[in-house]
Length: 181
Image 1 (cartoon, helix red, strand yellow):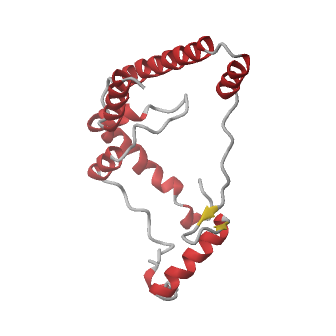
Image 2 (cartoon, rainbow, N blue to C red):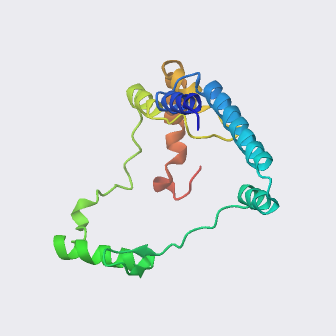
């Protein structure tokens, strides 16, 4: 891998981490450069092999996916164990160190009164919920883009708060037994 390609990959990763607006452009450029580097490597490998056996070996290594390694885990003694055995041993170790887990008491779970109405949300709570949206998560084609909700949270929090608070009595299934009236 060339140093310029490595720098481009680092710039792409940094742009994604910092949620830069130029991330998509850098990602597309990086993908093009990686594809180009792969193509040139394959051409070099195939054109440099004068031996037919080496040529076919190179072609197979490029076109066939690598074999998946065994999922067995090696321990310190060198013996192997399945992932289930490993998890069981790990659980037994932590139970021996920390003791048996205590069951949750019924007092730790808050009781919700069937007659109490749902609490209305404030503008601050709506803004806080909107600011916690993750713009890296995909939405369906019909949904409102997440990044737009995050950027315009000051403008959309008032109508969104009204919509949610007006829907709460309709969604309060505890009082009338059904989800909608």
